[in-house]
Length: 87
Image 1 (spheres, rainbow, N blue to C red):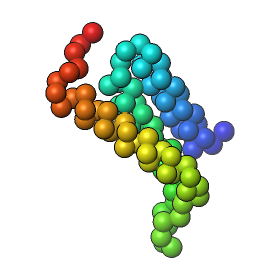
Image 2: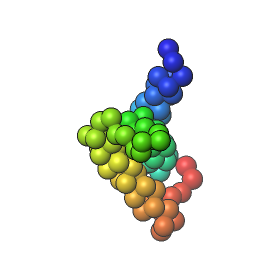
Image 3: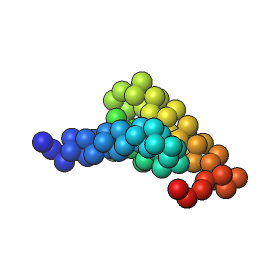
Image 4: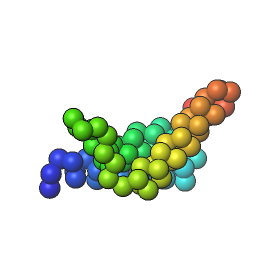
């Protein structure tokens, strides 16, 4: 297993833990985990070299880009009104 494959597994586990956090009423933690893992999934499909930016799978980049925006909105929305309480 190459290091890139291992990191994708790590970020997949982070995304799954995010889903568990939602089920345990920890939506802010879930959005934080997803904000990190979504960027990793986007980076996996984008290559930057001397010829420019090459996108391997546009659909996946678009999908995880939308997920990233939603996760960041969730973080912003939950923290802007101080609705987050320690449990």
